[in-house]
Image (cartoon, protein in one colour):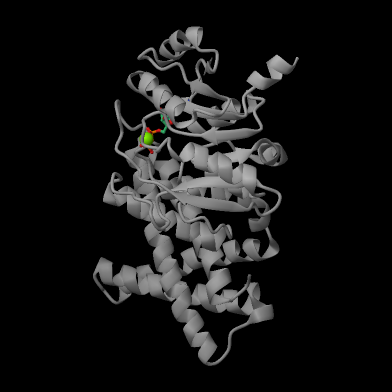
Length: 367
Ligand SMILES: Nc1nc2c(ncn2[C@@H]2O[C@H](COP(=O)(O)OP(=O)(O)O)[C@@H](O)[C@H]2O)c(=O)[nH]1
Ligand SMILES: [Mg+2]
């Protein structure tokens, strides 16, 4: 009994893999070196990679019982892979780490020590706190990741700097508290965890240098902002479907009618050029939406006088960004080969969610 206990792992490192064969041996070597005094196990979750990743893991596992592989057939998805890996271990501490050696393994003992010696729920490997580094991410992805973190701060009240981090460690009990709420979609499991917790999780962000990929190629060129939007929609639907939202949507629908009425008369009657007519129609529709929302949707916090004017500016600026997000998301999805109608719908949904969330908070100053 005692002998068995002394060998049960204290820490499980969950590693999702998709075509990472060339990284497995080196990764395990480094984990082993980083954790000389810890009983650890590595749980790989492989989605039936065509390069034989799972077989490579099992080969090592035959000589090293600390190494296991869950091979999922006909499944794909980073978040769901991580969840299944975390649920397959009995270890009281669970780390999640990429296979490609971008995550500095020397942080593992520091993360473990932090969880063991304090009562924080979660330790996050961070590229964005002092001492951390993010040089090996393209500028576009860096921007998307920082932008998403800002958005999450506003929309979800989550204050993690490196919210898109895929490198973190948590306690088993914390996972048990929230695992049934996880959406499991997309690839940002940390965000999913933070947004799914029934209470505000406490966390520490530890800096590390994000390295460039060792072998193989990135599977996740998609946009962090899209991932965030997916989580926001999944998590916040309950909050979104409120009387105010319904009113906001009805007013928005009316705005479309206003838009087309103004556009048609500007082109047909006043003979203006399309671009000019479209701009006028947009501004008129935004203004009428603002006026009606101010009268009905937000009648209890109605803006008057100078506040009306600054509210109008806040509303039109916000909705312009909403339109940009709409077009941006739709083009990303369309580029990723989703159908045009689905892409457009997703764009409209995200643009509307943005407009509603931000104007509610900024224009009408509601928490
Ligand atoms: N099981 C599983 N792992 C995945 C999937 N997509 C990516 N991964 C793994 O998740 C980790 C992060 O992916 P990566 O391509 O490095 O993303 P990046 O670091 O954001 O470029 C790597 O270990 C990948 O092999 C998937 O669909 N299923
Ligand atoms: Mg990577």
